[in-house]
Image (tube, rainbow, N blue to C red; front, side, top):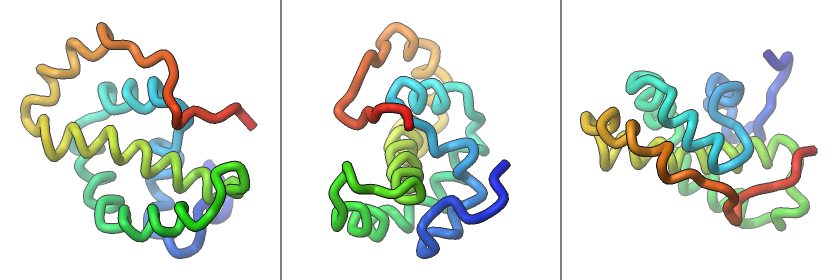
Length: 117
């Protein structure tokens, strides 16, 4: 667990979710969506969704290659939110049925990938 803030201060309310949801890699985010519980997804979605527009504005004002670690962590949270939003808003109670087939559609790379620091 980290000892101090890991996100830009405007998004401090999301700090409790960084350790679990701020992860690199589309495949890793898809796997976390599958392995998380409905309660975990819904709690993260409830906290992050209202901040999505503000977070995207904040991140869009910076060049991707110039994002600080805190800003990159915010980007990773918002990318995880995209996966979780599908589960919460679209799949809903049918998410477990969909999840059983997700391993057959493996993500091998995506434009959102970054090199490990």
